[in-house]
Image (cartoon, rainbow, N blue to C red; front, side):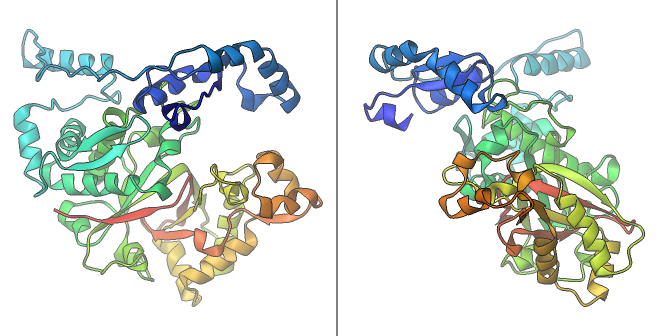
Length: 437
């Protein structure tokens, strides 16, 4: 896209299943037409020799795309009328029609929404001192301009209260940082989604659950639920992360509706997450993780740090996990940092053994390894960074760490005493932002 804007002819090779995301992306970047040829198979699922055969079938089309097809400047997007009216036999019928209408337009997540009336949006904006027209993010993959007001509209739809708005704004700011890898999280074929962890005094002020059922469902976690849901609606309606258009998730995941929790700082035997990341204890923060998948880690038997963490290492050693990315060359490389979500019982056992968070990280780094043979099934040799190519030349039994360094592990304490923890495979690095009212 950048080359085309500079007058240098290009042409893309696009699998048929990915034509919608190709077109949506180049239009978001300001091009009505970006030359491409379409091949039928998904190229990641066939041998490299067949990839070459498929591409060569379209050689003449490629030449034509490079020499004939015009490049047009994108036209301005049409502006909707200032308001849309939904009617019905009574209020409830009108609200049903509104929900159906929002779904038909792609603006809803599938659950009933709260109508974003002008009065409701104005009330929501009362939760922050920031101006309604302040731009918080130009959001990938659709490059939508996310103002405070637009974020507030989605917060209303999600069922948030005005006091929740600053948390959502801070989380959106975190997602705009390059380390978060929002473009991949938003439009991948996997179930990646933002996972929010809230720290500081605002946890109790808002009633954010950090104990039993912190990720829901039910009344104890309703604040968690609506904040997490607002993030998904923001991704859809500002970032244009629409299923089947730019969100190419093969199966989907219920995690994508809402993932927000507080850290159980009272049960944390070490520094809480936000203090470890450079903030004062009395500062309220939100850390956003690009969660790829969230795995239950049950262990009600172990009584030593080594045994508890060996259970985590077995989880981390699942073959073909995304953390291998430390081996991949730019620009596809991402610093994917997994998260240990320790329940208080497991944290207590580890701390009682005199272990620090850095001890946990070193143990995980040295014990979370897979043989080279497993790596070859998930990474093509041509995509490996130059300094790592020696790994592919070694024996298949060579043990390779699943992350690049011990520091890549993040540790939080969440939940109730139960011997059940969690492990989050992340598609980038966590980002922490202070929550400003």
